[in-house]
Image (cartoon, rainbow, N blue to C red; front, top):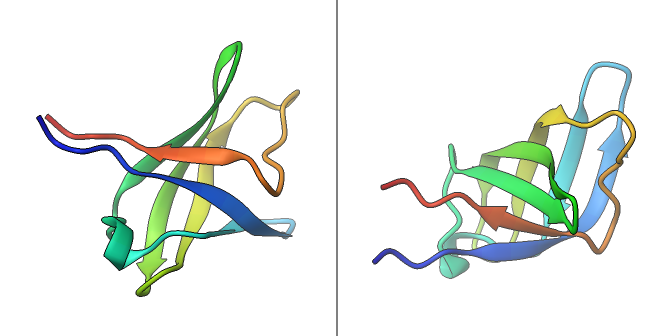
Length: 84
């Protein structure tokens, strides 16, 4: 069984074209460029992200899909999807 990784959102930079998300985990915690992530709440997945840059203890992700009525916020937890 492969381990799963999670991180919390440290900062979100919103733009007309895209949203950039800084997360508090990186290479040391198993986060890799290209990793697909999801943010969940009690109603299920509300955002999907992809890691586009990873450093030792931080990473940058782009929001690629999200429910319009639910917005990712600082402090939210994202979970790296484990590929089987």
